[in-house]
Image 1 (cartoon, rainbow, N blue to C red):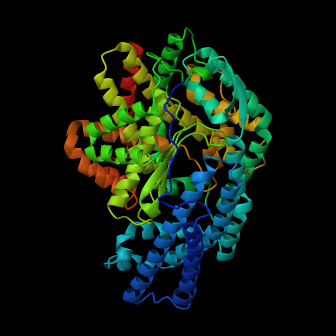
Image 2 (image 1 turned 45 degrees about the vertical axis):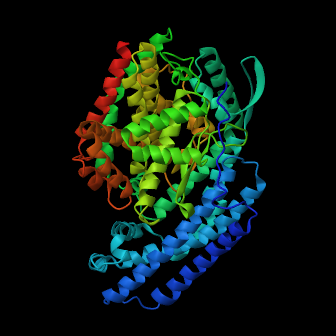
Image 3 (image 1 turned 90 degrees about the horizontal axis):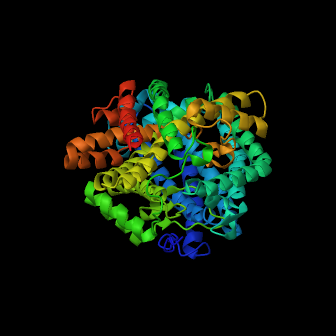
Length: 601
């Protein structure tokens, strides 16, 4: 398979190396900035905050926000740089050690963040009057208002500080175990007549291989690996979910979903409306699964066929071809988007090579110190991976729009629900352009297949993940769960979501082992925001098709301000009411028409 040497990313413009003086100086600098913030709080605020003197109070709030923004910028830059080594080589002991050292300083910064939250919460009665004054506080009105509202869920100062310290040897350690452990797993697998030691991410990518025999063998090999390695992963998941439940209880939250909704900046009515629309759409997706099964000579789909390509399956894209396709189609949507993507390609922002020790999947991370992003993926030459690069570039463009607008780190705190908007928009741009260009039924089928694989994962599989995590959190309150119980919950969730569209004898009961989303104690229910992003972006793309060029400035403004208003207000700019089930149904109807086109070929 020739993919013309998929590139590795370059972060030399951030720091020359982990041993460089610049990196060491900034590491010390973060510690000093944290000291200064601690001194600021202990000397300027704790003695006596003048709540009746709005001018002096505004001065103090502006000073605190300014200091935190500087510290957040440096902290996120250091973290991104270290993670660029850890996520691509989990064998790198130097990077792992430096990550641990960085996290010690980050805990100290987290403690000051807790101080800030508590203080802003105490100012809630005068906050509206304070934010009416011009200055940094006024510019961060949404950030400060939300901070004050969330402060009610803080434990005592001593408890929050202890929780932050224990996180390093608790939930954070469990998270590292899952990431390092799964990235270092290798499997002996025969492909194209050659027996090779294949990293797990590469094996998992074989889900989309055109040969069913290869997909089936890869599925069996994967199941065998998870069967043998499931116990430490079950321990990690128990540790993380148990920690979240305990902290939620002591913080006065009814459940993990409560905090997830706050993180997503939406209310339960919005989630319920979206979930109801998703449930109603499941029969349409099952019709797609059955049609796909029929194309493969089956009555029902096996798990190893979910990602199988259809239509013209002999096309393998070189990385330079993927670049060309992306740039050309981005340019048709917006020259600004294309120009951004070209810069990212030209300056080695993307690490696409598959190799041992590298984390699976894909992500985009912000590197605020240089106003850039970096993208990780595992490129295998498939159309799906071309779409993945477009998706992650969308995240990078979102960050670019905020940087270009001069937003601070606090103004760039965007919810997951909106974080997926630009990424899914970029996927849609690519697939819709390709569909519009081709007259070949087999190419059209291949493109629709790629679209619907993604759509079904974000709607059907995400729904199963939501059901899985809901039950896990509920049962974890009573006792630890065995690996068998995790598997039973996962299979039950998949049967509910996929229904008769998937063979119940061949599901993926070990999906919980390698999906890193489940192992993030700071962000539970790392699933439904993807569905929000897909359906919101689909609705926006429909508006773009009506407005074309006049849509772009409003879209860029939306991306630039996603950290400064709730999703319900931002959506209203485009005439969208996310509280209404009809909006979500309209977006799902667009996907339903893709299913109709697929089944008709």
